[in-house]
Length: 137
Length: 187
Image (tube, rainbow over all chains, first blue to last red; front, side, top):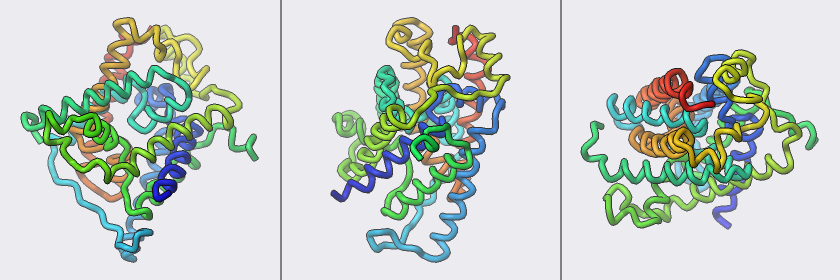
């Protein structure tokens, strides 16, 4: 039962990604063509509201449901890691039109071939884990 | 009511809803990052034996696997009960671009079935797009330490410079493929 709340949030997430068309390959293509405000509006408004939420959490030292203060681990500074890794991710994002969340939501839409996309993403993750010591971070 | 929410949702509904989901996960003592699940799945599959990167207690990530299972169910609910018209109202520039690249009826469905089907997978272009694209998403997300949810939404909301750099990378890669690779992969 302790996982039920995550299942419910996940269901809402899948519905939101679907109804706001974030899972549409077309919307991602349109975004990278700068033809529509739609995706920028979604990501931008999520960030603006997210900044407000996190500032309030930090300043008021709000606690989670588990009674401990909500904390945020700062990410280690690097340029190579985020720029190279991010660029590789972007190459794949524009091809599949799906980042990891939408990949799973699309399975729910019955587009079975996304199983292959997810399996390939797992192989990509595995490959990174095996050669990460040789990569600039 | 059902009919009302079965219309496509504008950006000013979708974006704030995503921020609220992130807030919900924070309130539950977790953080919003979908691609971490790919690492967890590798670990469950035994990848800890070949790389120490996968050698961690995956039971602490069960909540995230449950979350993504929910996203699959949410996709199915939206598909079966909350969609009146499966089309996407694209910008006219995008429609004419894609028609020029040989794609029939752009926006007629959520995902172009001409590109995302089992038949297409067994063509060279389909293989590059689905298997190659998926591989790059998985490799790049872990290399960058996060995907759209972890960096673009959670990271930038927390004013993290690394996340801003990662998102610049997302766009460098995305623009390269959209302008220089997709013209060869479509049609």
